[in-house]
Each structure stands twice: as C-alpha cells, then as structure tokens.
Amino acid sequence: MGFGVTALPHYRGSDQSKTWVLPVPYLDYRGDLLKADDRRYRGLLSDRVELEFSLSGSPPVRDDNARRNMPDLDPTLEIGPSLNIALYRSENRMERLEVRLPVRTVFSSDFSHVKQAGWVFQPNLSMDFKNALGNPGWNLGLQTSVIYSDRRYNQYFYSVDPMFHTADRPAFNASGGYGGWNLLAAVSKRFPGYWVGAFAKWDSVAGAVFADSPLVRARSNFSGGFAVAWILHASSIKVEAEN
Image (tube, rainbow, N blue to C red; front, side, top):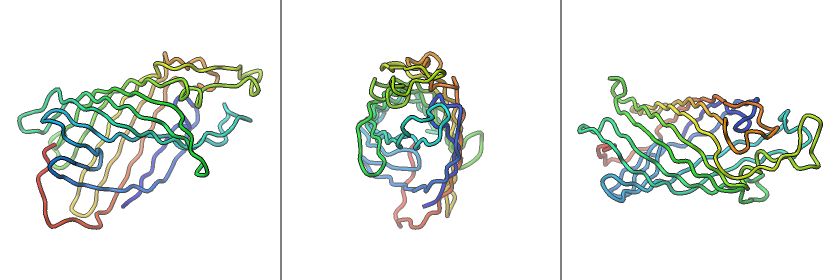
C-alpha cells in the first residue's frame, strides 16, 4: 500500500484544476493465464493477444466557475474490457508496441446512489520499454489515444440545461461522438521494498463534438502525478516477468 499525489483538471476542458492525495494499492501477480502488476490486470488469449481489465474515472467537481449555480459533478468510475494486440515485440522483450481497444461503461456516484453515465471507447497506440534509456529496472510507457463517448456521457459533463442559462453561459445540448485525444508518459520502478511511479498527460478537446459547450474553457489540459507504495508481503515463489 502507498499514496499518490496528482494534479488534475476539474474535467476535460476545464480551466481549473485541483491537487489530490490518494491511496495507492500495489499488486504484482504472474500466473500462467492471469497476470497483474502496477499497470495492468490481464488474461492471455494468445502469444500476441491479451484481454485486459480497463479502469479509469474522474474526481468530483465542486466550486467550478464555469458551472456556478449548476449541480456538482459526482466522481465517476469507468470499467470495462480492453482487447490488446501486440504489433511488435523485440527479441529480448525489452520493447513492445500494442494497439489497445478499451470499451468502458461509466458510473457516477455520490456514495448514496449509483447511476450509469454513458460509455467511452478509447483506442490507443502504446509503446512500453523495460530498462528504459539504459537504466536497469525502470519501465517507461508512452501512449497516444483518441476518445469517443456517447451522448449520455457528454451530456453529463458538457450540457447546459435551459434553466441554467446565463448571459455568458448559453444552453447547450451535447451529442455523442469524437471527444478529443491525449498523450501520456509514465515511468515506474520496483525496488526491493517499495515501488515508485509517475505520469504526465497532455489532453486536447479541440474538434470534439462538445468543444462549443460554454463549460469548455480550455482546449487542452496538462496533468501529472507521482506515487510510492511499500511492499508489505511477497510470496516465496518468484517467476520472471515476460513483459
């Protein structure tokens, strides 16, 4: 177990951000068919195809200037499968290029109720490096994604009902479709008694179907964070990590 510190925009397209301190669980398991580590929970379908457990989400939004006098946004959890196809893998397995195709259903909750808030499809191209830049034990991941979300999801974040119309916030009805793209870089290393990791992400909503919403006040956002977790227990049986 450990903790992480991250600075995130209130939502994609917001011009405000907040710093969060969060608990970080760490699990590393390598079985014949099921594998889990600091980044991924996956089952092997073949040598080059995996089915991954995909998670994402967003924090609650309170006191956002663009949403003044509108309802707060509850935190969301995105969960679903991802089909991963290896396009390239080096002979020494130090580099790997994948196409990943995650589809996630989205739930919003204030912890007294749970509502389904739409769907997200986020195909991406990911490159992973072990012993990155000649540094033993360091893992580097680079990823670029495009985002498609349905009408319900976009309405949750970007619609403005007529009752909340103001002089500088016209009514807006969001549709489903293209939702922008992002670039992500992440590094991590497992030490004998602890694990460390960090990430940086650049996110753009330029050209998105909701880009003209008055709640979109920034065409791009930057976020980042770091985490540390201590290894509380390890099994006596160890195997080599293949990927």
